[in-house]
Image (cartoon, rainbow, N blue to C red; front, side, top):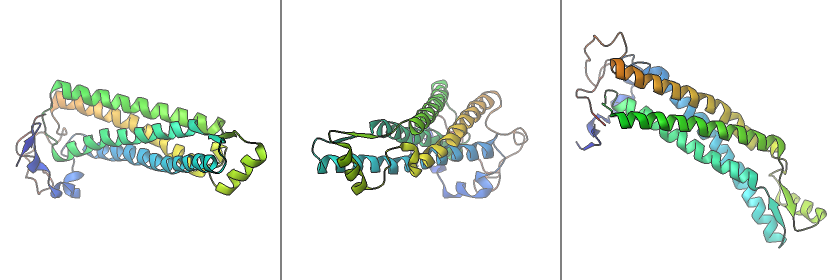
Amino acid sequence: MAVIWGLDLKEMQWGKFKNSYMWSNMYHQRRTRFIVYQLAMIFCVVSESLGTAALSDYVDQQDFVTRNSPGATVHNNNFVGIASYNIFVGIYVATIFGSAFFFDLFWPERMESKPVKLAWRICSILACMFTLSAALAYTVILATKSAYVTGTDAANAQRLLAEYGGSPMKYRDNGRAIASVVFLWPGMVATFASTALLWHSLKHIDAHGPKSTHARGEKPDGVDGSRDAPSNPTSV
């Protein structure tokens, strides 16, 4: 089987998704990390998905008004901007902690160089910064901002908006946008927790290796047992 960046691809086995292996306590804080990593990914991706739906409606609203009243413009780019940023944040968090999840699942005893460990730390800190900034900006925009129409009189603007339907001008009245923010905040908390666990895991590996305290003196039984472990540590 091919070896890419020091990772033996033969270690990518469906058997490693079994409860006996995935949730074993052979590796330090493995179960805790897997749960928190997945919470960060799920909350942020759900927030991203809800925000994308609201974003699509506001973009369609812009197109509808402009098409039916040349010269008229719906100004909702503040929401479009923050929702677009939130899409990036959701993808970033899922990429970083999704990678951490699968690397720990398939190659729990891999040997990583100092630059790789530094990259994990930097990327996780960036995830915290991105989610915090997105949550704060998203909340402020939804709570205080509204879309508005220029290039036509108020009566025509109201008629066009009524014909389009949906996408309320006050962002705080948009249910999907509110739900997106509601999911983003716990996603941010889970991202901070994931970062703390990742840093602690790297510190533990440097000091004691990847295995838990009680397992370091035990011998693994193989890939198919509850004490599964790769036979040959891989390096990155």
